[in-house]
Length: 387
Image (tube, rainbow, N blue to C red; front, side):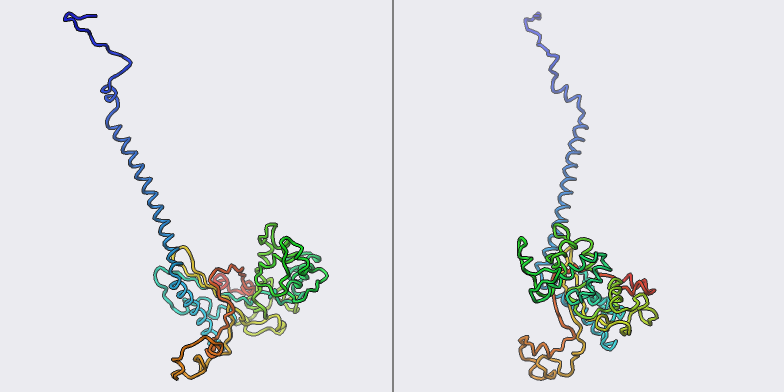
């Protein structure tokens, strides 16, 4: 359609609204709010990621600081071991060189010595009497059978097979017992190996012995519940008489059957919560009342990763020094004190250290611990809980 001046009217398409019309329909505040929410979400995500990174970085730094500075951690751990040994020795000297039970005062060396631990460090010292368990490497076949059959409820036939296999593994000869096994039997396995013909080095070594591998371990070689029960009452490091004060109930019951005494009245009528002399009914070769072997574990924490030091020591208080207690046997103050020490056996003997260090390791020893039976026989509940 033409206008009077000859120009044409512009065409308007209803299906194509103008930009100004669209902008007019979307409020400016809504667009600004959406952008703000998006920015806040990004900030929140970044804050979470940064916080998580900082936490992991701190833990990693603490871990690296513990092991990248071994001199600090190791020296402090060994100093705490010396504190524990000094505590044990002092208590023994107070009680005429006799150690019977932790209630004498050697259970908590840090409190006993009144030591203030530096800030940033945490220390735990555990002292365990290893003499409270049955000596698996030296116990008689009859006592071993009683343990397996009466305490672990293993049938008669399996018990005899287990005891014969263990004794064949330990003894030095190659003669197979009736129900035992020697190297020629183990060499047929895949892979094959020989019998140790010597004492067990760890209780986990039982996994290689015929019969024990099926009774105390699962198909994948992992210890089962029966193994946990066994580890509570036997030890491969204790070879002497059992300290009755540290023996759990199962051990006392085995000793009672062996020697013919009543274990339920063993701790009746005591002035102290432990025995100071061996009862007449107990065979002194099987049971005693003194500590003969201690396991001392020092756990040092600085961060989440511990530095663990474990020492197996045998008290030797009969070697108390005199005026010639310096290396080389010379009296203090002489010229030989300034001479360089070489670590010779004669120098070590001259020091007259009141302990024999049988083993020191800088990793965790996950040995099973058990509660002495005397706690269940006497009214000393608080002591039992804190043992």
